Amino acid sequence: MDKRRSARSRRIQRRRRQRNIILAALLGGLVIILVLVAVAVSRTGNDEQQQNQTLTNESQSTQSGETQTENTQNGTQGSSEVTAKGFSIQLIDGVTYVDGVLIANKTYGLPQSYAPGDLADEVKEAFEVMKKAAAKEGLNLYISSGYRSYTRQQTLYNNYVSKDGKEQADTYSARAGYSEHQSGLCFDLNTIDDSFAYTAESKWLEKHAQEYGFIIRYPKGKEEKTGYQYEPWHLRYLGVELATKVYESGLCLEEYYGITSEYAE
Image (cartoon, rainbow, N blue to C red; front, side, top):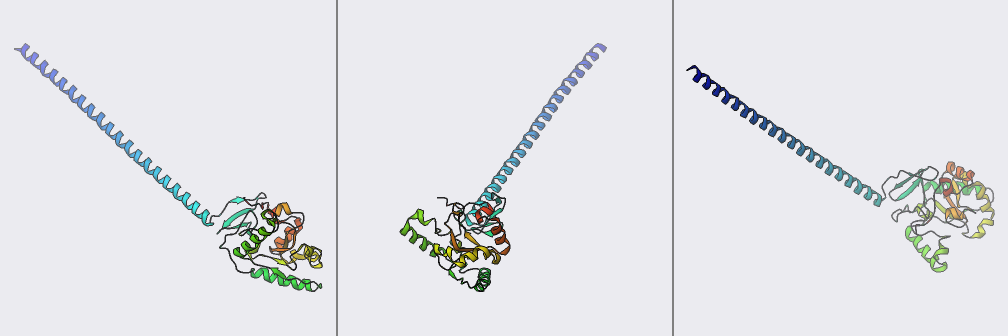
């Protein structure tokens, strides 16, 4: 009797152990499955987050590129470039400013839409003061050619090309959009001819123009720098302080700022 009970008890215990083993295995498998599911969900979330971040970055990059391109095309992109002498170059509405000074030469042009219509008031006022000072010395100064529109310059340049050829015309006339006359900040005085250099007015201007805010824009011996032949009659307004600095440096405006004056083609 006791033997049968003992055998039965052992069978029951054995079954319990087997059942416990099976339950433990099932629980272990369930835990593994849950862990794998959690890992998969986490990876999926991270992948989606990375994809969303990538898309966001690409979108921002594209928008930034499009905006910069659009601004550049519209001429509104401020530039962080500097000249060879460290002066800042900024493009505003298609107009180039070097250290805050408008520049118009063979490298830096003006858009056709830039049309002040006349010489700037400060230029006209400064000229009148200079004219009166010269008159006291018995000299006569008068403006022969002041502001010119893009269209007017285009007509003049094309006429010169027809007469002397493009290569020669480029030495004394600006292409449309590259003329300082379009800026309203310069003018030609008296006789627009080489003979003006030998007049008393020209000699007086060489010594005193800067005192009234002007420089002789295309000095003698600076043809390779300015891109134009010597023009003693062509004066550019810079203001007394800057004009004096440029004059005393003995440099043309291109040399002073460290910029070029060359057509791209």
